Image (cartoon, rainbow, N blue to C red; front, top):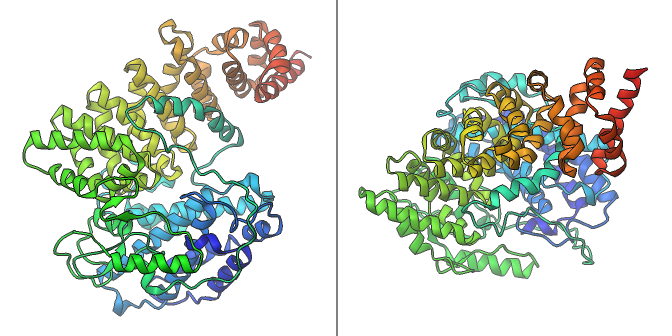
Length: 611
């Protein structure tokens, strides 16, 4: 990708150029001003990377989700869009043109937020102050992304079944009313340091549940950044020919396709445009007579030649309708067409075959999504045919493994239908619905949306009344959702604490002790959750786990006890009487690093309480 060859010094020059673009005029004045401010917030980050690099990001080996490439491409696209959008006047503002620029703003915002979310802090000497600036930029980008998603998709926010809290933007009207008020607030999805550590520690638990599902999981791993001995690339910034840029994403095209009006776009972005319900060509505003996407082989050849000449790696695309690993787009398109058949039998067979294909490989997941299957599969989630519904939710689960598909699934307004399956589907469908919510909630902004959709009470019900597999699926999803502070209160109100406490002492749920403790340790920082844990008389069970439990369970039990008993001498004395001192002393010497810290803190509090 073009962004790989740009050094930190060149990126700083580009950001400085963006800062010089006037944004005080035009229909998109506020959007352009906001985007400029967010990009400029990255200046100090890039400076620190330039000054303390152990490895030049422009010279490092990259994966398809390389953070530096995403950052550079996002900033380059931001400059191109700002240059045009600031000149966009009211007389130009047909509905279609406004929608196109709004969609471009959404794509750029998503690209920048994605890059920052993958920033490998461990590779660079990033100061705390700059880290806070990065988190501020991310939170602003997430809010902007949420606003653009709501504005650009008619279905996206209309189906949420219960109102969300103010910072979760439950509707377009609320977004517009609150936008100015919220612009200065930096907290959207807040993680405490202990919760970040818990998420990392518990990722093996979460993935273990997820891997037990129908999905093929060969590509669940996130980006891995490696050090290389490559010499630094040239600092010279390449200018990409305008004809090689997608008019929607403003990025170098890897798989250009022609639409009915004769215009060329990047396949993934024009498909996304169509999936959002748009019926016109973004560039010409003409109505699309059909939604056929024809590969532009000539342009792809020119782009490939240009990339070779400038030593730019071009991402893998498609050859004659097939992915380079053999997926056949024509077969997949035929199956997607059958999903809308009037015949129940034909729909059932088609969704079953797509389920099988989506399980096999990442290439199939990409092709199925680009064939337009996701909105149709979302519609089938409400099918009255049991087999069709079960296969449709499993297809959505499998497709969600590929990160880019998560966004398309959210764009299609899938959450409401997934929650409906979670509430009223067969047990297998409910289990896969819970696993799908876990997969989608791996994206931070989706935690807010899912939390406000009514999913949490349905997940708590599955946690209490599901099969062993269903309980694990529910626990995984609830753990991930409760990382976001705003969802902790929802979970407490849905009755999660009594359900978890019961698992600590119920012999029939002994296999769920690990999961119950992990979730309780995340919830314990919430005041309502703390009160509910105390009310459930949990101290004896937690101390019992301290005495006989496995290492991770002892660690989590100590963490929960510390949250409950800090600043409460009465509970500390009770804990001492219940025999906590000896196991805490053992944990402080022989536990995990986190367990040692928690045990040492508790012992110090007990010593002071007894004086």
